[in-house]
Length: 263
Length: 251
Image 1 (cartoon, each protein chain N blue to C red):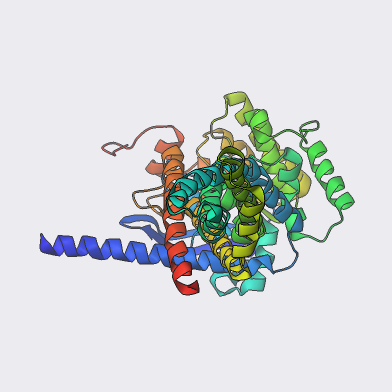
Image 2 (image 1 turned 180 degrees about the vertical axis):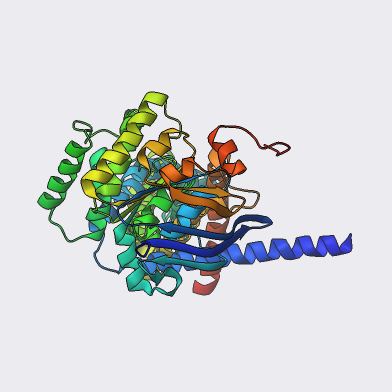
C-alpha cells in the first residue's frame, strides 16, 4: 500500500518535472527560432493582427469598465478623508502598475491563448504537426516562434491601451459623474506617474507575453502527452482548459514575483 | 538482385508491453510499388513512421541506399527527408490553408524558388492530378477522393524519390478505392518514384504492387513478387488473403 503510494507520488513528480522541462525547452527553442533565417515576417504580422488587433475591442471594454469601477470605488474611499482630488493618482497608479498588465494578459489568454491551444491541439491530433515533421519543417519554428514574437509585440501595446482607456474610465466616473475637477484629475495623473511605474508595467507585460504564449502553445502542441491520454475532442478541450487556467495562475504568480523584485 | 533502396534489418520496437516489431526484415526496391499488408493494428503504420523518422527503433537497423539511417548526421538526414514524402492515412492536410497553400507549403518553406516558379509548379501538379479549380478551396470543402489527390499533390510537389502511403484508401467507397489505387499506379509510372503502400485492401492492392510483404506478429512473414506471393502455401497468408481467421485465433 505504502509502496504503491510512493510509486504513485514518484510517477506524478516525474511527470510534473518532465512537463516543466519540456515547456521550458519549448520556450527556448521558440525564442531561438525567432532569430533564425529566413525571417517569418508575414506570419508575425498575421499573428500580431490576431493577438493584438483582434483583442483591442475586449481590451477597450475591460479597460473602460475597470477604470470606471476604480473611479467609483476610489472616490467613495478618498472622499472619507477629504482627498478625492487624489483620485487621478489612485486610478493611474493602480492601472499602470498592476491591473493594466494583469487584466490585459488574462483577457488575451481568454481570447487568443485559448484559441492558440485549441488550434495546435487540433493540429496535433489530426497529424498536421507530424506532417510538418515529415516535410522537414520544424513545427516549433513554424507554429510557435511567430506567435511568441507577435505576443511580445502585442502585449505591451495592449497594456498601454488598457491603461489609457482605464484612466479615461476613471475620468468618466470621477469627473463627469461625481464632479471632481477634470484639470485636477488629469494633473494628478501626470504628476504621480513616474517612468519607473511605466517601465514596471512594461516589464510585466513582456513576461506575461512569454508565459501566456508558451503555456497555451505548449499545452496544444503536446496535447498527446497529457496524462491520461490527450486524444480526440476531449483531449483538445482538456488542454485548452488547462492552458487558460495555468496561464491565469502563472500571470498572478509572476505579477507578485516581479512586483516584489521591483519594489 | 540489386541493393534495396530501403532495408529493415532485424528491427525491434516496443510500446510499453506491446511488441510491434520483433526482428523485422524488409527490402524495398527502387522504382517499384511495394505493398505491406497485415491485420489492423499489426504495426504497418509504425513501420512507415520509422522510415520518415517519426518513430525510432529500439534495436536493429534501417538502411537507405545502403546507409544506416541511425548513423546519418543532421545534414544527411535532412537530405534524406527531402527525398521522401509521406501520405497520411487521413491526409493530414492543413485545414486552415487553401488547397494551393497546402500543396505549395513544402517548397515555400524548403526551397529558394521564386513565387512565380512555386505557382507554376503547384499548378502543374494541380493539373496532373485533375484537381483544377480547387486551388482556393479549403480541404473541408472537398470530397474524400479530392482530398486524397490534394494530399498526393503535396507529397509529389518536391519530386520525391520515395513516397510512403499509409492506408491511402481508408474510408473510401469501392469506386473511389479503385480510383486511388489507379492513381498511385498511374503516377508511380509517370513520375518513377519508389512507393511503399501500407494497406489491407485485398485483393485490390495486388493489382498495383510489384512486391508484396505481409506483416504478422512483428515480423515480415513473407515478401515476394505479387505472383509468387499469391501462390504461397503459408496458412497465415492464405487465411488473410481469403478473409478467414486461422482456427482458434482470436480476432
